Length: 81
Image: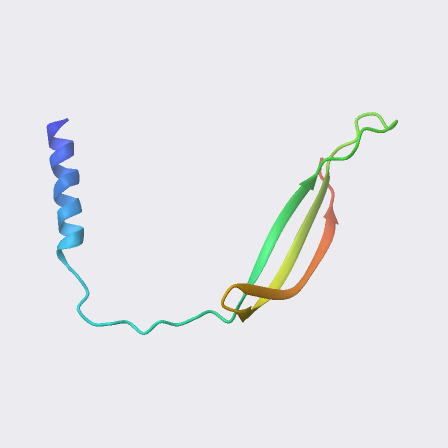
């Protein structure tokens, strides 16, 4: 156990012993694409064993200002077994 702690401590010290001396130019991201999946619980109806409904979507958002993104998205139904 002491050997493992020593190895972890030495690797931690080694990782932080090298630092970056020059300033890096910050770059901002203008937009991003996203894929997602939503599982929607279907309400209880007279249909026995009704499964949840699955949707998948693709979106592209652009930066409007420092705190707001806006864009387009498309959803499509997915069949789940």
